[in-house]
Amino acid sequence: MERIKKEKSILGVINSLTHRLVFLLVIPIIISLVLMLFYAWEYHSAIRRMEEITELKAVVAEEIPEKAWNIVSGRETLPGSDIYIVIHEVESRIDEVTLQAKEENRLSLVVAGRTMETLENYVDQIRDNVNDEVPVVENEAVLVEVRNVSALVDSMLNDYIELEITSTARMSMTLHIVIIITAIVEILIVLIAIWGRNISMRSTAAMVRKPIEKLEDVTGALANGALDARITDTDVTELRNLTMQVNNMADQLETMMKKSDHDAKRLRKAELRTLQAQINPHFLYNTLDAIVWKAEGGEMDEVISLTSSLSDFFRISLSSGADWIPVSQERKHIEGYLKIQQTRYRDIMKYEIDIPDEIGKYYILKLLLQPLVENALYHGIKIKRGGSVIRVSAREEDGYLLFSVKDSGCGMTPEQLEELNLRMKREQPKVNEGGGGFGLVNVNMRIRLYYNEPEGLMISSGPGGTEVSFRVPCRTKEEIFEDESISG
Image (cartoon, rainbow, N blue to C red; front, side):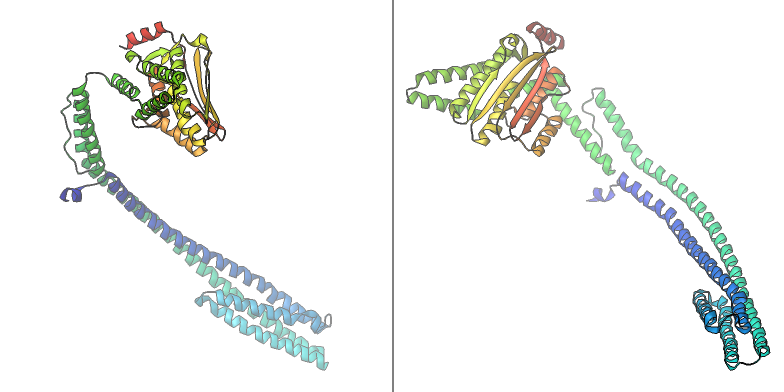
């Protein structure tokens, strides 16, 4: 527990440093952006209010006096001039701007709004004079008052615009100061972040340098043959795991070297040859049971055929320890296997073998076809439980032998096919894997290892069945022995 508490993760240290730097750099930026957006909005609102008041100035200073003059001079009637509508619209818009304006700028607008009521009163006098048919001279006197009041309102609106301009200028200056302060703060923060980053990086480097140097020393010693070299434990999480793995690797390597002086490739081939010797006992038991059953039934010809097929099967499987056999022997091997299996699965399985005699002289790695046939039987034909066929074919093409094992069984789903292809690309052979003790993965690995081919088995499958194929170079007995002597 004490050691666990002292552990330090490189990723954790880097994450902590990153979070601190991000916090230091981002928070001021966010604050400055919020302030700038706020001032930009205030500036935009002020401009919009001033534009609104500027439009009203033209209405108050020109349009309203002109309409009043047209009424006094008789050019327009009072209802036709819409003067009241214009006055009320101006009052309404002034009220709206007053609500939006800042407190210190509202006084001019409030007074202007009240003065508009006085202007409306003068218009009422003109209306009454017109209705009473008083002399035009009296209305002209009232018209002078209308013009004076309009000019007064225009002056008040000008005062408001000047206040807004002054306020906007102060706001612009404040924004300018905020930007300068923010820039200075950001520069200071960047300098602090760089300083903190340098300190943290030196601390992190010091934390991992010593165990890495130890790791380099030990791996160098292992590379030079000192298999007893080991790395002492470290409190850095990632390096501690790596240290354990390197020590485990050294332990396994030392054990392997003590057991055998062969190189890794020869040891791997020996392991694969051991896999080849793993014969499924169930197959042997079932075949012997079938022979006994046929003998008890007096079917001596079947007994002889089964016994001969079983003998051929095991003789070719062993092949006196040879890894390479002629194609003709491989054909005989799968033919004996299929004869034996047809005794058990006569009702659901038929087979066809199309391997020309002219390619029987070539040598191939033994036991390549039988696991494929066994896979087709147990994972295709047997599951379908209906009349199905296994077809084994081969041909020569452009210096290669092309083999194919095809069944009309239940087939695989796209997901199963994808999973199988991934296993063949990644996994190592397993003794306990299905397919006659080898399985498709094992056969695929053997083809790639012995023939030095980038690809092994090619598999296609669907509802109509599965086809497994591969191709290997055409090689004679002499070429096989020559390659074996060179590699040996």
